[in-house]
Image (tube, rainbow, N blue to C red; front, side, top):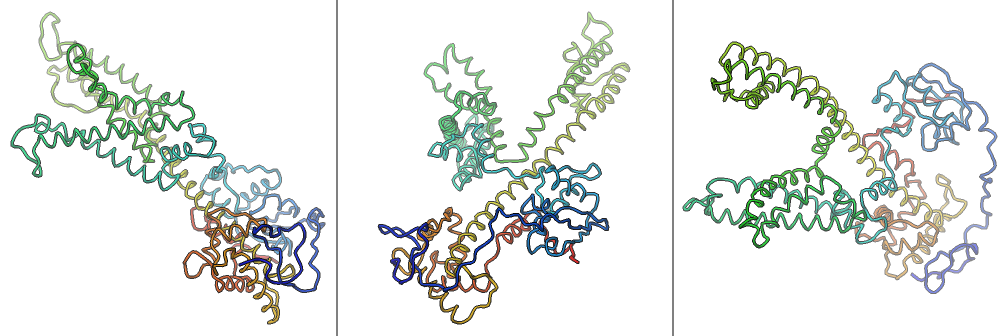
Length: 573
């Protein structure tokens, strides 16, 4: 695949040339003697853009300057206002849509402000914006830079490298295949730790009763197994905590986060028990108290699940955002318990100098009042006097009002946050879909540019091609193939394609190169041979290469955005 094997005039001097074995498309076979087409200077304004066009929306006619409709590219009205669109060519279009909502759409083109009408709900307005192919600010997809800045604020290293890769692997389950594998491993260890924590408290296993077996394993062996699992779980999460601290560039603020503090406290009892002399003597009582903190380990394991469970995050966020409501509920409940507890005590004890009933103090009576207001009613304590029974009835009825009002507010907040979570999940899916579409667009732009080099400057898709011109195009395609095939292997791989596109001034990412190779690769072997390359050129001739807008529309239709073509609901006259 050495370049320059075919004689011909060189390309312009500002084009890349081959030097020291580097790739260029410097020499290609002569093309037509016809001069290249000279296009109008882009700075020359089209005078036809100052004219007014008419838009009939739902029977109401609107007039607007054509130039204003071109202010927001990639939208429906922009497509209709450029050459080839109905408004540009005919000056008229009809939409079978809501005319009142269309007023707000036109304001977006006039003032660059998009405001939802007060008479529409969010879902209906979103459908209108979908039709006009306008991005809904409420469903706006964050850019990669915005996501990066948020992650940097959370502690991600700003510069690319091992530390940033480690941070993404540990903190962002969707960052890569490695982060997904680590997330799966973490969830497995969490579940294993919780199961072991629960089963080890079984009396036969806890007391290591002899001659008791489960599945052929004695109780003592089960106890040893659960102890090993505990050691493994603690070591795993201790290592995870250390690595997360190590790769976090905000180390001073790392342990100010509640979840990190819980992770630290969850593993502390295990290490304190291993210190020499702590488990005996004066330190024994301290360890007994510290063992109570082991329950936090389970809390920590459960909280870790929230990192991988959207529903758990919604529940936690609801609790945090309903602090005022929960505070009001707690104060109201405390007042009610003290009042009814006092009433229980004095109703059940006519004489205070003698212990007449089980309600021997206001503290115990407050406990009875609490389980009565919460409508639990264990039955361990019950009033025996008429006054006490009346108090219990009033306390039960009061509990309905005390719990009912704040609970409804909390329920509404949970519903709102749950809908927000669903919207964010949809946006994340759309963002991933659009990222894939962007890679396909980059690949298409690259191969279209490569195709234009092969077809020549004067050729346009749809032109009549004679047999002589077709033979010249195939000859030119062969020359380009041999020059792109840098190692002369008879096939073009991704590295050679990338070098070629860089030489043409259209560098492509690895993902886009993979898309370009996949587009031309018919046998699926990952490289392009001369036959496949010639087939690609013939597809360019017949116009079988999709436009970039078709890729965008296909990506949007594939998901929740449902971008519709204007041809179905518009008509030009």
